[in-house]
Length: 299
Figure 1 (cartoon, rainbow, N blue to C red):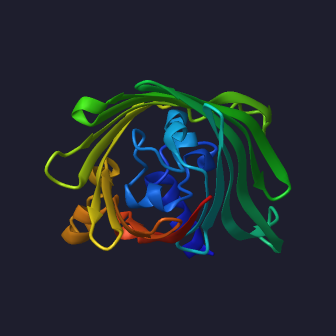
Figure 2: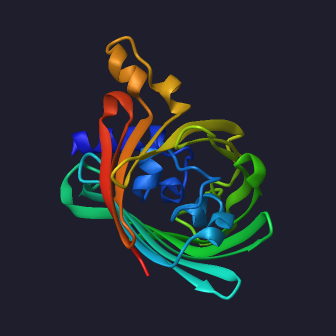
């Protein structure tokens, strides 16, 4: 149980950038862990929470992901994308389970166990016109801690401009704003609202896209960055990698190699015309690895 608590503390401090409703900043897909946070200017099945405008260029598809954290902490997600006339619709269900913990009374006597988990159901809509895509996502986020529950209605919105002549995409989004309708206690927590600026550049003479994101957390007044790349390989393979600014916070003198590789992700995907499968992992230094798999079906 002590080991579980230590791992949970590490994850919440290094992988999630906020202090309340951690599941709103959780990573539910291979795209997120492989690129160290997700590329906001690249259309993918995380777009509904990173930048909803990215849904506009997705084909009809179904995506499933299973993510494993240390100490039996896990995340699962399912996303369905449907094309409706000139608008794309994305329906997503995400779940983050922190596992079970021992419950004790005021004297320290154990009296059972309790579980903690987050569930997020959301619907996103996006539309592209010429070089501009606009999108919005709304959903219900429910967090459970034993017999206690907190819940909120959460929205995200965004825009992506495609400089097609130069193969550059630039995005801006406002994520995780909304209102609570149930709280754990009288303390008035704030949603982890953030403003994200994103850019993606496809290189002219290489099958490589370079992308970067800078996000500003409005409750904490902190800035966080991420840099990564997506490389097209032979035999229908695609390699993704990324690193984020938590790398500097995690560095220690005890193990230089682990410090340098901290807060970095890598993933590989095999794709054919209709199906794709992804594998990926993310290292948060001395704390260990997050890893998982994803499966996609084009409809």
